[in-house]
Length: 403
Image (cartoon, rainbow, N blue to C red):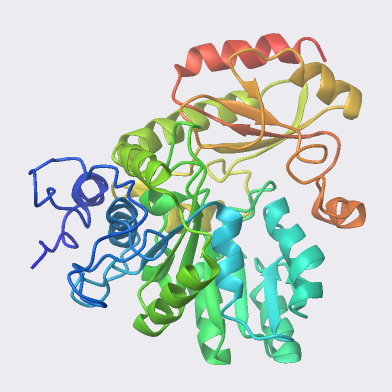
């Protein structure tokens, strides 16, 4: 029987959660299992492994760790991977989650979400699956309740903090509305990570991650994950993970598992540095407005302090959104003159990244919707890494002088 790590502190579960030494060698770190197929003693008689799309020991170790971190509550005796499922990308994970829906079903989605989520729903699944997609600002529970009443959705898709405007959504309230409506509530927890927020503990049915980001943490792997504590959803997801086949490969699973071991210490540094930078940026004369959940100026600061916590204290993540004074000219000048902040898509790595959502990550979002959400030409998104905060401030200051 596998050791139950569910009662350990999160920091310890990052390293030991859902894992045990390799039984054949005693290796502390699960080895990379590259074999695509496995020998059988007799037709249908094997050691629990048939084909690597269906069963891979490295992926299983990563999946169990994610299940532990997100508090699925499932042991290996109940579900082989403790409710965790790893995929080739975040979008592959989202695409598989959408297969829980039947053709023509309705999904109510947070209005401000990752651009790829918006594109997949609007430009792919609305056509290929006939999904009715309703976007609503879930920061307003009354609006969400009205949308649920009017559309009878099968799924609620929430993201918090949102990408890129950093809205906060009360997950317990959304989960309660979803449960009352008989809908599956799914939370994209990529920005907060399980270190700061654990949606399953707040009543959500499923969690999604782009493991490319904070969980991998080193900008050297692409992946996605789903985690659930519901055994009925586990059964459906395991069938679809195998049937669709967009699984995470063993090398990416190994890198994800290596990355997650330092997630606790990295997130503490991300949060501390982001707070310093946000406070500094809020005073800068070239910056019109700073959006960061840790600032009292954030309209949902109180919710953030309650819902995002690290080691029992409020912690607000490593993402900052700023609005520069001016427009596209000033944004380009600023972004062309940063050095430590790499001008690149993605986020959550040890290195600091910076980007322009309207041109880069959210270019696929219809222009009218971007305007409604406030994704303007002056909006810049920062992913604060783990470099020394003084050096990051100096880098931003020098670049802001050029705009």
